[in-house]
Length: 224
Image (tube, rainbow, N blue to C red; front, side, top):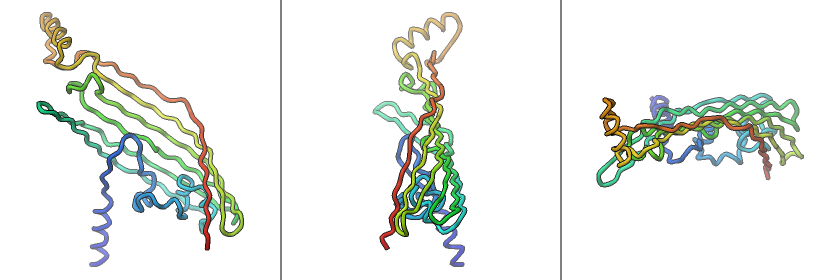
């Protein structure tokens, strides 16, 4: 009975509410469970991302970790006379880490994750459509990493970060319900094309980024 109660409690606690933009902090179930204070801990393969120096301190020769999250965001806009809300699709950031320690003083790691991935959809005809109708961004990161042990208590690690991504953005060319929009509506109504005050024309931009390069480095020290 106690195990069943603990299982239900763990399931309930796995749901999270976060207020943030396109950055995703769900790159490790263990780190999320510890409120991201695990950088100074030995996390196995996940240390490739959070502290490369800890890779060589793990006890296991081989470690693999992978997972994903389902994120549903909701944004509301309201003033004295109008309100609107988003209808966002589910974002699914994921991560995969692997590490191998062939020798006590040397380890290799590989990380692949999506540190920035999200989207927002306001619809075509809300009052702010001239500013934004929908937007999305996806960033992918690949990180090969190595770590070396310097004595029994200190380890150094560094990795090459390779990042790329894609994006899309659209907004109405004319203010929805505005004076200019009304003029065009009347013109189209005269030729039998009713638009019912909706968005007449939209501009959409989409593309992919160039591949960018950076680095990640860490020092892990166990004082005792």
